[in-house]
Length: 394
Image 1: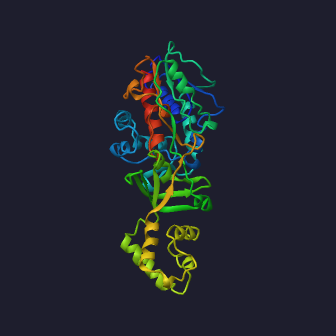
Image 2: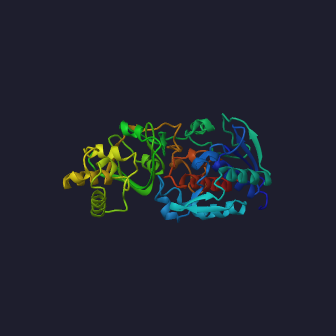
């Protein structure tokens, strides 16, 4: 801990950004009060990554910014508290980490509670005083205030937009709010028929009304639900969805069209005596077969040996371009994060201090910042929380 700053810092919100801000301010010597409306801190943090907590992404800053909604504002904060700093921070707190596919970083235990508990223990070690309270008014007359109340996603965890109202009362602009990293809704009935089926190692594209590809990601994982599609690839794609956009899935991205055609032909020759519906088990999940055949306008009872080249190419086209219509996105109840928030032009990117109110700082999801899935959003919380806590204590 550094020399005491004789400064009082009040942090509103004990989520990822708030806990980090409180810790950094206390490390810098400030007297810190951490105010949280829930009974316990880190409620939303405890359910992230399906309870595993994908806490960051082990990439460099330039690549990180390519996965965020704003490539300029975050650079300073990331430079001072990078993904690698986050990893070192938690390992120093006694949480072993593991890096998985896509450089996603998780606690080795696969328990988000280890991350929450480590943060809470550190606030206690540093003497942070925690209070249960719902704040309805900001007062910076007795020291600095860091607002880290989150957004509107997962409102059952306490994210009900309180911070936006506090910011508005302080004169700040809140940009339009919408759910982000959210499942996509589809009118296609086959989604319900395939409910619960997870596809791995597929690629996903979004095409606009004109057929132009506006988003592409993978290989990765996606999931069919009773209302449409979800999973990591879909959540990232949802950030780019707009009216009229459709999803196109390559079920076999590891094969070129020529290679896939050769593979289908071999299977047809191997199972020449079978009906078409029973000849694709080596290539596709059995639940996908009737849907793919239907979209290719092929009769599952047709003898494999009777399939023409044109029909085979029709099947190939569906496998390489499995299309799902999209009618909209899920709600804030299902969203990982909130798009929109405190207008970035009204916040100093180096300190997270309000340009309108001296002594007022913002951190985390309340800002008009968001990223793709893969640990980017939590890193935004860590970096902005660190910057706000450090500056607020000075």
